[in-house]
Image 1 (cartoon, rainbow, N blue to C red):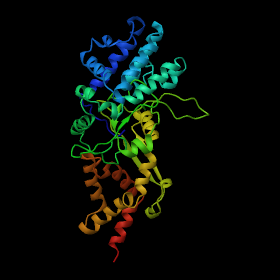
Image 2: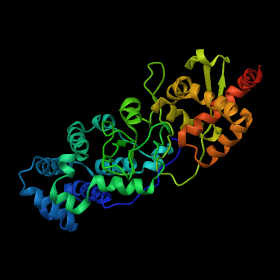
Image 3: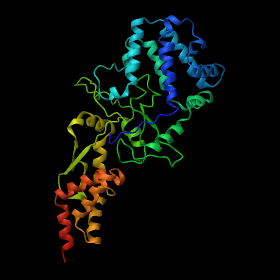
Image 4: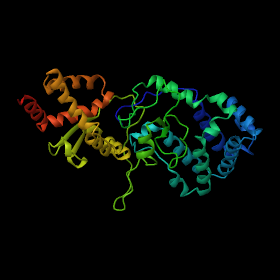
Length: 368
């Protein structure tokens, strides 16, 4: 991830608060709480009002929500204290996204596949419930929206604070922002298809461009290495999208030859840094196809090859040396790295300079 988002508190956060209450105060207390009823929600007035409204509603989303809360309550009522404790650890671990991303070894991270080993019936109900929580048909129900607000409003508030206008996962594509009537999709950083308990936790929800979300990341699990029959699947560190700790990713480009017209991705080498972020950078590159996408950018007619033409145009039209262009570009990259892909343009043109391409341009321009 090239840069982190700033987390923006919003009324929508209340939905996760409701789920916290349902999990800890209703489900985990089920073995000693007696029959399921609305009285179980008395300590959370707003949630009780939602549950009561859903109880008398004939909307499919309302029945889905209440029905699963009650069914899972019934399954939890048969658990032992030790089993309840295990679920509490899983729930806490899956919602502590910062520690998940840091690959904290003390954190019990649970996938549906892990829960199914010992709790197949509960796992099936949890999977349907948590995958369905993040659905427009549920979030649009009037009784719920009155309490938690609207996800489109959340997006507008989010983009009013996060003004970069570029996808932080690739840096290439624009994001719809505060001046658009539409919005980007929220990516479940830990995929909701694989992980329970955090599908409506906005620390796990991050706006991403279509290519990052739907073409490259899809349902990949960033917290684990890819499946390889020859190796054991292992946990790995990933960038936390809302970290308050600043960092900067470095990129160095080298070219195998100086014939830009025949340049292909195989002719481009990329080196990322700093070394302290190597594991997170490796995960980022794997999940979002970063090397493929950046190399394709460098080889494209209207990107890398055009950037080189810009240097020629600057030299020919203004009588300035290519080195002057790079000085200006370096200053622009420092102040606006993601404008016009400066963060890619600068290392690519530096690689061209190292291959002697600017000297060749100068010689052509000086010829009678």
